[in-house]
Image (tube, rainbow, N blue to C red; front, side, top):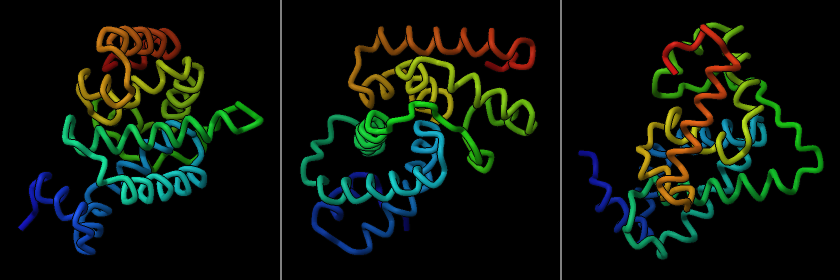
Length: 181
């Protein structure tokens, strides 16, 4: 029987080994996916995802339940990715080899085409970081506007604007190929 989120959190806080395995099964691929979309490199994403999981395990006692567990986890992943990106001397983000990412939402149907997938990657790369983060969380990770705002620690209105501006820029960059956006 699958544990509820509240049960999983309590077991994680209690240091239950099975809870850590269940956490990794539930959230591991989502953490990896978001790191891929944020940093653009699958190898770096693996390292950042592992760093995120370790940070979650070390910090689970600080989780107060003011958001969903995934929103809290995303905040940690976002901080780790942001720190990593700011430390990189070369800010040219690569979105190589993220074709295996299975993102929820309307973009999944579009990503079936290799050429279009490459165009989407390039268009995402061209967005300002704040817009890219908001679009990735809302459109690709399936978080609501409110969850995205909490995860990014930004005002709801700002996040809605960043998503709208990011999607507008993506539509312009991709032309008629993205009616689903």
